[in-house]
Length: 177
Image (cartoon, rainbow, N blue to C red; front, side, top):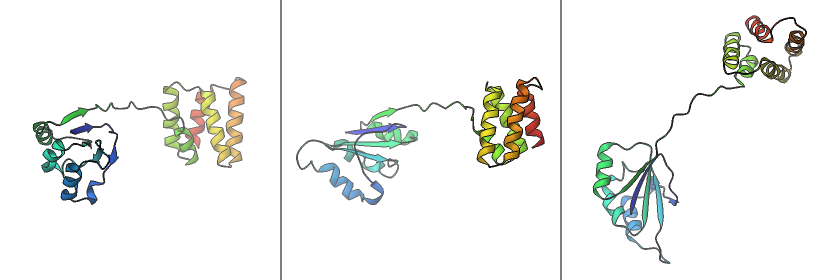
């Protein structure tokens, strides 16, 4: 039996097909198991190299699973001709997610532009200014920079005393870094 999985993992014994000759693979395919029963073998990204052996794998008492990332139409047609079962799992594109630690990374590198951009992204993503200020203060302490840490702490407390909006104070801090 021959199965071809696209973007999906099969279960079975992983065969390192790169280090085995085609004759040895044909021997594995045609030989029954020592204690009976059928074996399942998994070959990753091997279809291109072993395309001419598809009939041998199909006629085998064992199950051969090819895990492929992409399958060209010619190979798909060749596999379908010998009766291979092809299962394709569509890969969903992951939506970009905001990185909370981009602000800390930019502060650690003392990169004014990236810090400002990361701040704007964090505020656009809905992060609270207090949380961002806390993250930046943590990074300043980790950097062992008492001046930055003190400035961020005072900025936080001053904003709560009415000295200004914390988002605006953080933006000014990033631009004068």
